[in-house]
Each structure stands twice: as C-alpha cells, then as structure tokens.
Length: 281
Image (cartoon, rainbow, N blue to C red; front, top):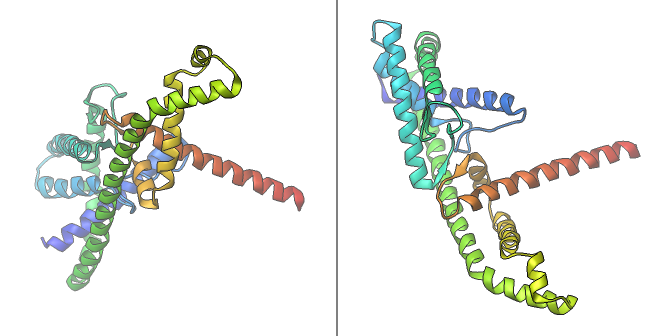
C-alpha cells in the first residue's frame, strides 16, 4: 500500500468527518457551526482514526472484534489528542464533562460506542468505495495530488499553530495589563468622579466596587485585544470550546463571547438595514 494513497485516504476521511460533525452540530444548535480547529474543511482526528481502523481491522474475522478495536482505539486517540492540544495550546475543542460516564471531559462511553459503530460503517460501507476512487486515479496523479494536499494541509497547520500561539500571548498580555492597571486606575477613577460629582469617596465605592470596575476594565481590554486579531486568529479562537489554563481561562472564554456578541450585533444591524431598504422601496 503506497504512502500517497494512505495520505489521500487521510484527507478524504478528514473532510468526511468534518462534514458529518459540522452537519450534526449545526442541526443540533440550529445555526451554522464550522467544526474543527483548522481553517480548512477537515478534522484530522477523523482521518487518523479511519486510516488506523483500515490498517488494523481490515483482516479481522468478525464484526464484534472490529467494533471493540475501533471503540477502544477511538477512546485512546481522542483522549491523547485532547490532552496534547490542551497542554500545547491551553485550549480544548470538545468537552464531554456534561455527558455521563466521561473521563476528564476528554472521552465518554456513548461517543466511544458511536465511534465503534462508525468503524464498522467505514470498513464495510465507505472504504470499499474509497478504494474504487483511489484505484481509478493513476499513481503519478495520486502523487501530485498528495503533494498538493500536503502543502495545503501543512500550511493550514502552521497558520493555526501560529494563531493559537498569538492568542495565548495576547491573553497573557491582556491579563497583565488588567492586573497592573486595575488598582491605580480604580483609585484615580474614584477620586476623579468624587470631585466631579461632589460625592463622598465611601458612598461612591459602595456604588462601584473594585470587582465591578475590574469587570469593566476587562471588557475594555478585551475589545482592544480583539480589534488587533486577524482572520485566522479569530477563526482559531471561535473554534475552541474553552480555555482551561487557570490564569486566563475566564479571559479566553469572555473573548470568544465578545466576538460572538459583536457578530450577532452586526447580523442584526444588517437585517434592520435590509428591512429599512425594503420599506423605502
């Protein structure tokens, strides 16, 4: 079996996995949900899982052994991928904490059972068609396609890794900016407002606590940070489910919510403008 054929299978299964997961999550959430941590329409974990299932299970004699291997293999792959990405990028792309019988939110029994059934579907239904597709392509065209796909995939991985590293750096800088400025700016803000409004210092502090002022400063800093992000960084930030690093998990999650809020606001304004234009006509 040629390495180029395996790589083409990996890409095709990654795209198929992205289609299935995006469709499922979009229907479940009743809105478009572009899944995956990369920019392109593929989820590599599905490609890796499917190719490993083909390599390990093709010669197995019965369906239940295929099911057990795929179920156990998917759990190992999913847990190790979640662990690695979390420790490298301090973010997670799936979280099963709210699903019964989960392990650290990285894997759960119901999903592992589903992936076991998925392995049977791949080996018995999908992969025979995949073989027909690749067998119909001459070897030299397979090599050319594999090289092109590898270049695109590697570029996407590099851009995503760079974007996630930049996000972590921006979150750390935002946290330091908030921590270093909060005490000084709060005192100055209270004093300035006391003088302008002829209010007593103690009375005003009862109205605006340091925690409330910190929250305001946090959102101000987050708006500044978001405004400096490029498209790939915003895409990487939206793709993550949450940030688990304790020092700035709250900042990361608030930043994601800020982006989603502004996007919804822009969509609402666009709808309002469309309605107004129709009224004018």
